[in-house]
Image 1: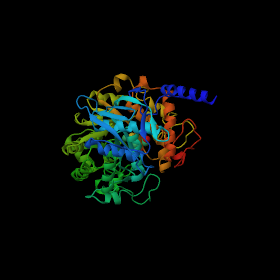
Image 2 (image 1 turned 90 degrees about the vertical axis):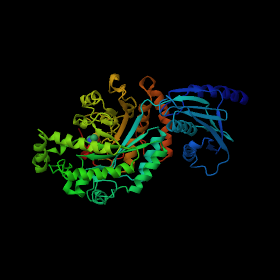
Image 3 (image 1 turned 90 degrees about the horizontal axis):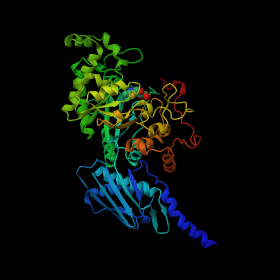
Length: 527
Ligand code: TNX
């Protein structure tokens, strides 16, 4: 009888495995299951003969072997580059028996092949001697080249450890751009050597506590994070928000202020003073040397909130008269053009929020973040003018929005909020294919604003599992999206979050972690 049961198990097990999807997020374009499992001696370390990729393989070892101090065996990975005419980030991974091969377009592709292997490894079974992974041949490439995430650390500051953890999860999900919103009304959060008060004075206070001591990144911290990200194939995009959202800077250097209007104290830089431009170009020079991506985001959002102050500002009135401008937005556009020019002269590409689309910035080398989902005409205008666009509409890509109808702290748009499945089905659920298939739509980005986020706990609660859904949205297209299969894979990933001690939202068991609430829900912003 016992034998009979055993036989059944042996025969059924491979079939069941075969029908089941692998626990991979984002799911690769093509997965072929091979007959022979991949067998890796337990506690082995991976290595490659390809000098150029030793660092990438070491990353895999560090990632997997955190718990294993002693390496007992060596497992070779054959790595080659297939070069020409392939999509950046594409790779094939074949793994079966004792052989693992990665062929990739570039370093990013090698890294992604390795990440796929590490995700397979995490759900591997084991016997006495081996880790047993399914034998596979995977052919894969990203749908979009820009798969981004933005964190606002002006409203609340989270620090190096939290940022590194986010970067590691981004890498796990093959996300490749991290926008840092480091300056805003509530604080300037990085050291500028030429203007030390920006950090030490401008860094004081935050959204919920105006008396908090200064919190900011030193230049050494910034470099450390940039290097940490680079190793994970992530480029960091610094954002210096201007001419609005500038109170962090103007509180330290009041002479730069464009004036105050009720509720928006010293909200803008003065667009009419040469000293403003001198100052900002010095800041941007330091930004350029700190952030090797050589893309600088210059903000340009919501200037209208503070623009009324310009109406009584004698400098601005003089500028309007001298340049024969007829309204204040022209002064805003004049400012943005000058700053964009400075950024480009530094050899950097310019990014901006979509309010800057009418400013007339040169179309080449400017990338627009389209965030105002209620203004599709702004996206259309950006594309018509020939700008490259990264889609990050509030619905469904703002992670400060709540993700369940019962959640009370955080934003909503009327009654609307952003579930992980809304994120998963973007952009097909929100835009016409004539829009999201345009070559100038270079990718997607989720943004986490932190007016309502004070603790790491709430930050994690908002981020997970939506970050996984975001990864899938950036990597695969709709015909292959499937809620049931995604949910199964996501369930496995929730276990990884649990092992890592994250305070995640569990959509399958919403009570598992109750909503982490940092601010009185009544004070949460509502639209
Ligand atoms: C709008 S998105 C803003 C941010 C806020 C966010 C809150 C954008 C460019 N500006 O300043 O933090 O809404 O969701």
